[in-house]
Image (tube, rainbow, N blue to C red; front, side, top):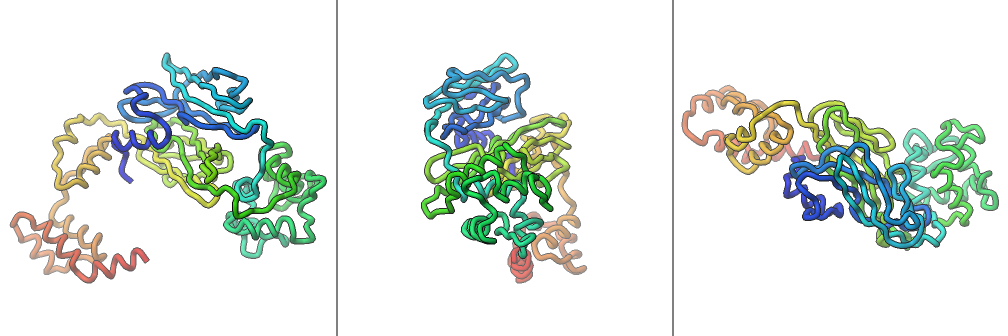
Length: 400
């Protein structure tokens, strides 16, 4: 995946709610820029990022967060927490600079409604209850089976509330429900302790049971999209970065889903990420973080430039054959990597054959190509390879 240019990065910031015209060339950005907290227990993790030379960089240090009205929004451990209906402005200060964001609190007087589809399933997925190694296995575990990763909410609701005589939940005393006592360690559980009594996970399940354990309904709000912050960030070696995921639902509500997300890093030689979304840089290069929540994925890109001093005009003066070279050189510039010299004719011939039709050139093909001194022979070779039937066969096999 090619690195975002300044223009494309500006578009990403607009999507994330950041007005580029409000962001100075070198300043701080408070993310998310504008959001709503819905309900009395709503909270949002805040990120204060440095913005330098058109690039979102790592988090600011020694951050001080304040709220214009703590009776509407209060600050707790770097999070905005709902305290009452209304609108407030949050201010973040660090390194002699500041950034602000606007927060609206709605439905503070309405009791939290725990949805089986969106809340109970997210707890079961995050805690690994419906993984292939646990109750999501084809045969389940110890007579209790869930759909793999919660892909079938109706089946899971039936398994929890109806199977085995409904013994897994106790509506009039939620704390005695097996779905709470086993994962919290109150009674023996082969899967060990998955969450503690009084934890957010415990509260979600207990409040759902206390509300009459409602099942998934057709008119439930559905997850519409996931937003990951920051979507692209440039970090230094050894740096850490909190990754935040916001879930947007079809009823217009959005909430911080970071706690319930499963994170993975596709290149751990560049960065590793823990279960809480805390990313740590381990080396130079570029990697992608994948966030999974309620059967949806979203990715963030992490760039860690190499410690090399390459003159800016080095890339500007580099030879270009087409627009792909422009993008490659842009990527190399951002990673501070000089481009490799052009391949020899022999190297080009071998690579072109392997990449397009999956076989080496014949001896005769090699002799003819290496003996050809006419201009444009590489372009003609590529066109001839793309028109060969082996190209269709090879790439049909690859994609299938």
